Amino acid sequence: MNKCITKIILGLLITSILTVPNAAAEVPEPIMIDEGMTGPDSMYLDMEMDFAKLQINPGYSDMQIKPGNNDEVTVTVTNKDNETITAKPFVSVEPYSDCIFEESWVTITPVSADIAPDAKQEFVIKVNIPQDVDIGHYSTSIAFTEDVMPTPYPTPYPDYLNSMHFSVNVWTPPNIQIQTPFLHGRVESGKSYDYKIKLENVADKDISIDPKIDDNNRMYDFGPFGSMSSAFDDDAITITAPSVVKAGETAIVNVHLEVPDDSKGSYSGAIDLNIDDPSIDEWDGQVQMNFNVWTQPTEPYTKTFTTRTDGPVTIEISSNPFSEYAYAMWLGADNQNQEEPSFDVTLENESGDVEMMLVKTTYTGTVSLGMSDFPPWEADSTGIYQDISASYTEQYTASGAAGDWTLGILPGNADMFSYTITVGPGEDNL
Amino acid sequence: MKKIIALFVVLLFTVLMTSISGCVVGTDDGALENSIVWIGTPPAESGVIEKKIIQQVIPYTGTEYENITISASQENDKLRLHVSGMSANTMYPDLYDFTYNCDNNELTRVSYLLEAIPESVRGEAIGIAMHNEQIRDVLSTGMDGNSIPSVKRILPETTKKFYEPKTLFSVTWKDSSLSALVDVDTGLVVDVWSGN
Figure 1 (tube, rainbow over the protein chains, first blue to last red):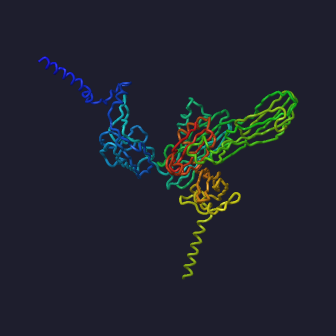
Figure 2 (cartoon, rainbow over the protein chains, first blue to last red; figure 1 turned 180 degrees about the vertical axis):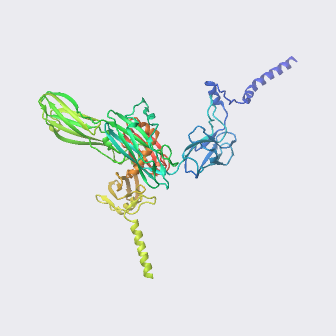
Figure 3 (tube, each protein chain N blue to C red; figure 1 turned 90 degrees about the horizontal axis):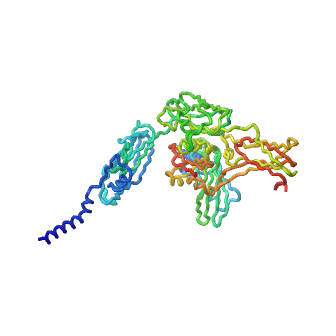
């Protein structure tokens, strides 16, 4: 009897030991996350959570649709799980974007599909943009299951695991063509400049405009290294323009820039044309401005040096090969004003001014065959010559004498230059 | 009556021939006839080569090549051809490099650098690029990017690797290693490259 009881107890004990893993396996895996839970515990739960595993291709779609038109994209959903999954796509609207994507714009066929393991199912997503929708960039997600990414903190809207990002650019051809889309160039302090922005109304109705300096101009003064002061304030710019661009006509917005005497650095900003037409969005209605201020020196740079021999003095001065002049300087947005660098050079010794003779001018350039340091979409230009930089050099000589000298260089149209002083017979004089 | 009909047909034919001759115009249907100038002695196959080149050099829509110059050099059993297309209303030429296999009469385009772009389009492309936040951030630092950028036409065969097969423009500030791939049809910067 005792043996029998012992066997029964032993059998129950073995059975209980063997059933522990099974019992444990049947416990539903927790996927609910306590809002206050953070740290390693929540990470563990993320790894253990159960969700449908779908592969969605493409994971991102971008459409350009005019109001009143439609477009569609076919999405292939592959079941990467080991059980059949019911995919029931729906639009997950992102409520905090500037342009709210409307769920009613989308129809998805089929509405639902059971996808077997490793099977593929195509869904056609059709987007109809109503005629009265404002132009802009509309984004949303399209989710195929209700599975969401658990987060240890509340989120404004759920992050669906089996979803694709969907972006629609609602656009119309602009009724106003901005023929001067940017003002860009180098300006001198103390000088004034006049620019013209040409606007052409290609619509059959008059369109109002109200050009003003953009309110957000100075927010761009915060660069990667902190606050940067602008070369001048917005009030250095005066804008005069008509209030209406008549149908089929061209209007001119006049921009007058008075560069203050003490301005230095660069100015970056925009003119908001405030075009009252739905075909122009906020960015399209702006004219970007980028001015680099420089000051033409009136006094020459001076360099003193001492010679110990009576050999000739050779002075060589070069413009910076990467200065703006190497790329052709534009002082205006609509007319190219290429100016060559120049140097006024003087030389003095203890006897007074020394006559210098310009003996050589040299143009130096760098030409690339596009093998490196070009954007990838310009790779097909490889093998064709491209100008990269250019430099201008003047060489002067003067009769030498031992003693103290002063070299004076007044650069024109050059923001940087280098010089070489050679005493004694140079290579050219040997 | 027959004479009048015959005269009308001849007149119509003459008008048609006149209207399609004289220049290469940028269309999607390919090129027509135009003036071609060879630098140096043309190769024996120049006639065949000209016809093939005309089919492969297409100016920007709305512009036309006033003349096309070709120079040829022998490279092993092939001809290396440098082609330049000049337009009246553009500052820079379109440049193409081809190889021509004399054995099978095959013309292969190996490189292109297309800057024959009307100033209005050039300005529009730069304007679109300057709207881009990444581009604007670099330009607004004032340290780089103050030069006028180059603007190059990028053909669909190339752009399909980065966006979709359509003509786009590369707006590049070389001194800043900064470039924007611009779609002037939609006014979008579709890609940005920063070599730094």
